[in-house]
Length: 406
Image (cartoon, rainbow, N blue to C red):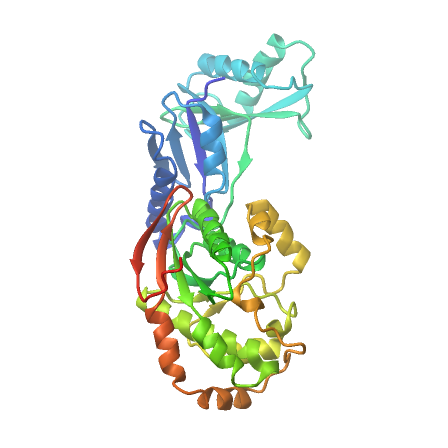
């Protein structure tokens, strides 16, 4: 069966009050971006819905792409016909006959949005259902648990006939709720946190800290792949900031406070990320922390680490268990990349007994005794390399400093 259109539903949440036009425009923009490869596809929208006219393109690859876009609650491939009873019956029968697995039961759910149509919704259920029953042998009606629910949506401009309602990713359209920086370590958690941030309508820029020669080029490639995967869901390229962290990390190790090294490193990362956020007009920092998972993610540790930055810190995984995070990573396609055995700088110089209850005054005292600490942070910011990444290509948009090993 060749469908005419795909109908996208983005729900009342997206279109209430003053935000209605903003969300609808963002939704249309991201759908157009995702379907750039299909040159002659056209679009139109109505309240809470966006219609994608296929103009001869097969619907399957388009549905596969759109169901991963944020802001879409559900989508359906539909056949369009005139709001005329006989034509609606004809299309409904053809669609039922095209169902891949022959159903034993069905029901018709008609909705008459155009009130001038001569038959009510209940009347249409019987008029269309009876026509299908007479034409298809052994088919029965089951109004509670049908194998197929044949839907007839009668609008003034056209009638849309369909039976599939495919769940979408939900959430908010990309960049409809501002921009934040994502701390992307290369592990399992942070890409999932990035996906959840995108789902809430945030535009994200990823920040990754590397410590050459202690970390390898494979570790950098791993993070690039994760950022590219996230850009698939955003529908637009994502900027990745690669921060040189070697000098800061070795300086912190020389402070001879082994049990606090993770706390000190995380505070330095937060300060650098905040400076990058200010440069790139971002208003929050997203992290992949899950309460109690490791020493730096106890509540006392997060309190001390979090006080190093002023921007809001968003922690979408904070109450999730590890197995929940892993399942989500598998679902979004980041798990296999995340478990590749390439170390990042967070796994270097790990103490045997990291502090789970650091003292803020002691941590601040250690930082105050580090020679040229602020200058080291500033140098890391200035030495940051930026890549613009998409699922297809990546382009270096800016390189600062002398870290040519990439």
